[in-house]
Image 1 (cartoon, rainbow, N blue to C red):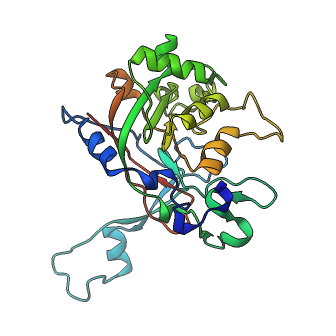
Image 2 (image 1 turned 90 degrees about the horizontal axis):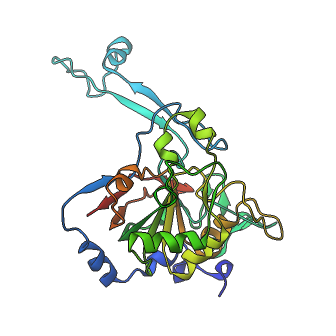
Length: 303
């Protein structure tokens, strides 16, 4: 069965992570020996750097204590002798703001605009987002995580602009860190890009290193269920090998569209790298929002 021929009944709206064995979750939990947790997300804020194809991140007041008084609003009814007030806000943003995970419906390919598991625009794209493989189907992640630190391996602070991480380098980093990649793992790949956050000029000078198609095949062969980087595009851009027909994001196509391997972007991996933490329990809980094509996440690496 191909990626396009699946159905919701066989788990194609979830991807391989939906078959994560219980014993792998138990084994991952045993990686916690010290009780240290690392947040893998930077703070989101209005005006934050984003991939240029996304709308800006905004936080706008909806209710304030003074606004309630001026408007004469009575959210609790007529009695409020204590002068009770509250604050509430709109958060207007793409689900791909800051540290986030792509839903399986995020990327499409082909004249029919199809995506993983059998989704296609004509059949499954409503006015309120995709109805198949959207963020409401995204599962929790509780499994072994591995960090591959390319800048440390190369002896630099941040990889240069457009620098590709290939399969051979992934192998070499594993040997240097004394780690192996196993089925059901989540593999996080550091380029050093988030060490420049949120300096737009410095970040622009390093757009965008990351895994190439050989690295993607290498991850796929090892049975990972998700992978992430600290850049806004996950994969190296521009792609050094566009393939045939020419494809500007062949890594997304291979991993996300064709094989249901979740991709994360803009992860903050600096503290993990500083402490040389290369193996850990990885935990991420995507927000189940119907019609969304991804989820902001604040993942944890726990040791």
